[in-house]
Length: 54
Image (cartoon, rainbow, N blue to C red; front, side, top):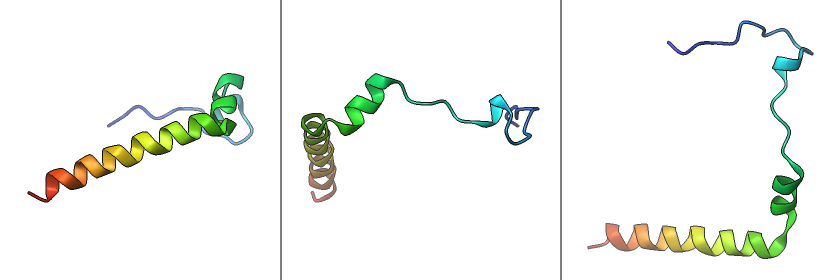
């Protein structure tokens, strides 16, 4: 069984998830990067579909 955090009370520091860094937020909103990720993911899906149709 995985270790669960002992402090699970709301509004405590350990209750909140980590915040993304400025770099992570920039990548999430940068449309050229999103276009590259979109193309890469679609190519992976096409490769997977091509393998399944032998």
